[in-house]
Image (cartoon, rainbow, N blue to C red; front, side, top):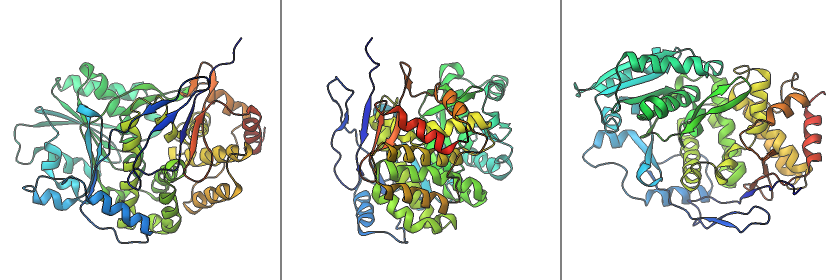
Length: 447
């Protein structure tokens, strides 16, 4: 019997705003290379960012600033609040990511993406007391025709399940939300994922808007249309690809974010540098202290650059047929930690950080990267106060059983995202020596 085919997607050192984008090669063994042509990414900066940055970073800002104007010039007040707009280019389903300070107090920005007269805001018990009233005000100010309802869910990854999802449907049906309504996700990644999945399936699809309030959601989960819930046996196994009308990132919401949640989001920021943007990783090494200290300029740049990277990948591979999978560096190991240890015991970014160290270790054992990258990854995650090893209770068997039902398994073959080559390069592949995986698991587990 022939061995199952493995796919290998290469993500070379490349940043779309530094050099022109070429072809992205997806080349399964024994098959012709598949060329994914870029569909374009437009990012416009309205403000300057003043902190440590290399000359190449300055080039990024100049190139971005040469794009088309961000806002209608008649909307001066809104334009002052929005420092950056990154477009996710998906043809007639394209949408903007607004990034700036005070955007929750810019009603025109939110209202332009509400088509009907009914809105359901989905949030949680932590975020509702902080921001729900402001969002309702922004949705209704000067717009008496809009009616807003809200549903407040319990907070935490352990509630990202079918039972909690039903609370959204219950409220929508009780409030008689129709097909022209808009769902608004106000919160972190759990709220965004569940609200998006509810929007994708309620009356077979209604509009929704993402207002992420955690760094994790702002740099990753709110962008790209992945929605869903967890199953007791595997994370994010039930869901849909469903794009929002817009993503509105008010960077001021990070002022109320706990330090642990901030560090969790940094794990995803680090990921972009490792898989495709070496200059961004180098910037992070120089500016990690500023990020942890919540320097507003540093955070704004990290969010902007992360969204640019995510938006480009999504525009090329929306449904994760290959290239988009590279955004899951460390996630196969990390998801195993979350499901094995118990949802909510570790934050998602904490599990991803430990998983990233394991993926990097395996890449080194395969001879695909040199030891300096291993050391730099370990150092930057330690500096960010993130775990660099899984919980002690994780065993080899727990990892293997969880990884066997990972979404990246194809025809029984576990495909992984691993680093290969210089910093900023990775592969998505099932073509690796299984001995290296076993050695990595044994190195990080007691049994």
